[in-house]
Image 1: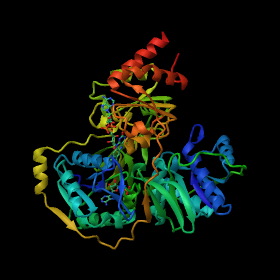
Image 2: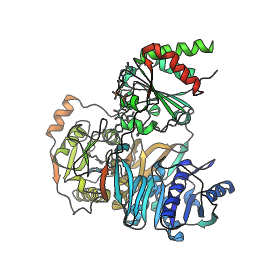
Image 3: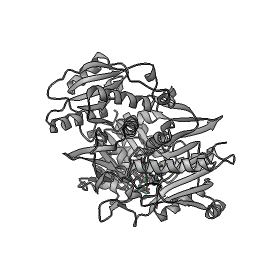
Length: 325
Length: 256
Ligand SMILES: Cc1cc2nc3c(=O)[nH]c(=O)nc-3n(C[C@H](O)[C@H](O)[C@H](O)COP(=O)(O)OP(=O)(O)OC[C@H]3O[C@@H](n4cnc5c(N)ncnc54)[C@H](O)[C@@H]3O)c2cc1C
Ligand SMILES: Nc1ncnc2c1ncn2[C@@H]1O[C@H](COP(=O)(O)O)[C@@H](O)[C@H]1O
């Protein structure tokens, strides 16, 4: 049995959790038809159950109870362990989100087994070898997971989320783990709504204008902000920009910032270091503006303009205004 | 009185090209140099802030002899003591590292130096295992708050905040505790000249590992194949603007 911790939001299972279910199915297929179960913390609405059925989930372990009214990593791990006992799973996995990596690390520590974070693919089953992202995606590691349960998380967008060829039951069973006091000591005591227009809008923006060291100074963003405005987009910046205090950290794109997936990303004066790329590689198109034609951001881009952003961006702004009359 | 331990790892600087060692077991830092991860720089800053009233902030690393550089760098920006577990970090998996840190915490406690708050990075910049802090918490039997970016301590309680899927989250946990840090909540300070001078004089506690490591589960490292470049150059300088706006129109991102 393969058990997947599925994270949900108002619309159902989040995309990366559906990717993890898709990964789990291909692992199950490779193993000769091993069923996939899901564990969900919180209520399971009919729509969610239906969605999990289309992803080929055999059983949905629904975790409810007082211990789960607010998030506690250790309590979630206790729930995953209980669902694993119910299902008899030999593989326990989740999407490589902050929560996913945290809960799965708790599970690994509690079970006394290894854990692989951010897996992209699997090779052999015996021994079970996975390939995962390390160094922020700049290198890959082949890792052996020979203990049971095999415990790992799946890197975002390693596979595309795809419903199963045939529906499964997604039979609902209740999972009531014994949660100890000590598992609840570190729990969220309050959650504040995100401020509008911060990284939330950056993550969901259709167009993101990027700015890096090439902006030159804290005063070098005027034209870039105007372009952002003209396109109704969001501004995203490199770590150099936030470390120098030119712009706030919530605008940072990359491994230690937001991961964006706009239709168009326009990085200006950004070299395209791997840690920055980690945050923008899922953009559909990239239009780089850079003085250096050899910069990695330029060679990886869909389109590029070679030039000084302080000359190119105002010209673009003017051309947009001209065409808009 | 809060006594903090902050754990940092010497890692190859990966902001430029990444090269592997010949045996494919690690990233070769000989050309690009070495650093500590951004999350740990913030953990060090938090350790300095939390202990600024004169309490002790000990920085710990498990690494080869050269890792003393990262200890000195941390001492220069506010840490007051340092412990070096001298060992080849490539032979230590995340569970091994957690166990070694736990031994140091217990030994120091037996000497009357209890580290009531242990800070780590959320994930190391090279191996990215996302687990040493959590494993350490289980070794020590302490609660762990993971992936936060601000930390304050008052009356024996640590308050930590970070961003979660539904917004800004707050944890409040009694000490002793383990907390893992993500970049973004604090701005690491730059070392001052007096800071650097002082750092040079701090004696470093050198230790050997307490146990034989079980090792990482690594088979080997690989570099992803380079992606072929398909870039379409739209032009040079401001003259490229019309071609750019043509693309914006084509992609349908230009509001009309
Ligand atoms: C653990 C770790 C995590 C990291 N996380 C992140 C992260 O989340 N996000 C992130 O961005 N970085 C991150 N980094 C840092 C990353 O490695 C790079 O240092 C950083 O992205 C570089 O920023 P930059 O492109 O703005 O600056 P640079 O690399 O200095 O590049 C500046 C670019 O601007 C061009 N340029 C200069 N002047 C102009 C001009 N007038 N007009 C047009 N172009 C010009 C140059 O040709 C160059 O390509 C991380 C690093 C580490 C080690
Ligand atoms: N060799 C080491 N020495 C000291 N601290 C370490 C070491 N390895 C990992 N850590 C700490 O554990 C955190 C998480 O590492 P990891 O679980 O390997 O991604 C890092 O950010 C460090 O704070």
